[in-house]
Amino acid sequence: MQDKIEGQSKGNIVMVTEENAMPDSRDGQSKNTIIMVTEGPSIPDPREWRIVNAWSIALAGAVITLCCLAWFKPEPYREILTFVPDGLAATFQVTLLSICCAVPLGLLTGLGRISRNRLINLVASTYVEVIRGIPLLVQIFYFYYALSGLLQLSRTAAAVISISFCYGAYMGEVFRAGILAISKGQTEAARSLGFNRFQTMFYVILPQAWRTILPPIGNECIAMLKDTALVSVVSMPDLMQRARSFANNSYLYFETYTVVALIYLIITLLLSKVVSIMESRLNYYDGKR
Amino acid sequence: MMENANPNSIISIRNIWKYFGKNVALQDVSLDIAAGERVVVIGPSGSGKSTLLRSINRLEEIDRGHILVQGKDITDHHNDINVMRRNLGMVFQQFNLFPHKTVLQNVTLAPIKLLKLSRKKAEDRAFALLKRVGISDKANVYPAQLSGGQQQRVAIARALAMQPAIMLFDEPTSALDPEMVGEVLDVMVNLAEDGMTMVCVTHEMGFARTVADRIIFMDQGQILEMGAPDRIFTAPRHPRLRQFLNQIL
Image (cartoon, rainbow over the protein chains, first blue to last red):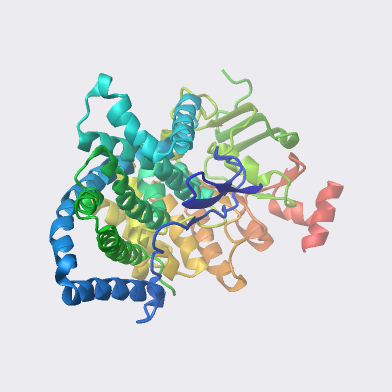
């Protein structure tokens, strides 16, 4: 079987996947599927928990810079720091709602992409192709402005729907790769005991695939948080929108966007650590003899 | 429905064909296996012996022919293959234990979910089986902490937990370090002595000789010769079998 490298248009995931997405039952060889993440802060490797690494330098640097700015140059930094973080609530709200929609959508898409049912497979694949070909910014405009005559979505709804649709497609690919990475022998063992396809997927395959899937999904969620900055274009009062209005009124572009950049950086760095801890917790059954 | 299906046989394989692309893996194979019979399938690699075994529980879909298990045609899609597979325990070369479940959970998963046994009942059954395969002290560890031989014994216990009428073994010792082959074969001999119907693909000729009621020799997708072990090993008739035995003995 030939492997191919599938680069994605958004450029955030590179997967080595089987040429043939349909499970082929006669080849029992394990598949060399790996998922690499190349966008966003790298998930820290728990085996490399040294004091000095890129992650700790970045976090310490960001926190110290922010503190110093607020301490030594309270005018205007304290003002910015009291005004801008009001947007955090909206940023987190959109992110969390989008995660809640995108992860199930991604799971369904991933299952659809490996389905033997031609129609389901085609629907899932088409969805992924279409969404991957359209910039998220365009999707946000589309749901909020272009469909306004039809749907009348609120800002939040338009933001959550467009981000969920976009990330659902990307996560679908992660789920698909993670599921295909589980060796064929696991499916055969479950089927030979009498489990049907559905039971095999939910009792045997997904619990294992989850480990491979979690780090890239976690990273997608972090990327999602960053991409919520885009929803400021529909005047969603998020972190970025607050920064824009502050900068536009005060003309303090450098100062404002420096603070915003540092805030985003600190949040994503902390979240990447959370993902890394969750990941190491999932390794419980890898015990060595 | 089937002509000349032997009423005494628990497995009745009738003129089955299997292709992988253009390659023919099984050519017009027919075989009857009686209840309680121990059949060992030998042959060079690529001879179709694993494909034959895997056809019996439909892990391979055959292209032509019929396979009756306990009188029911497994190729008939009106029969629920998932129910029929409960009666066909299978042990794989690569063990295929569920790595995210403990030994005990591996053995109880199917009985609890499929046979709707209570946890207590399933665990009692599992402990009895783990004791029988000699690893009851490892019930709460994960498969990765076990040796290959121990993993394969758990895999046998897992298959037995469904109380199948027939056990299928697909080269169960081929992936094991030599010093672990014995412990797995001991379990299988023990199983054979209890009267379990067994179909076993193996390269362990010593095992074949002691346990088998009948030995099947396959090459190029066909059964070339079959008979009692003594006869097969001491007086092989087919030249291909003689050549094969010369190479491995």
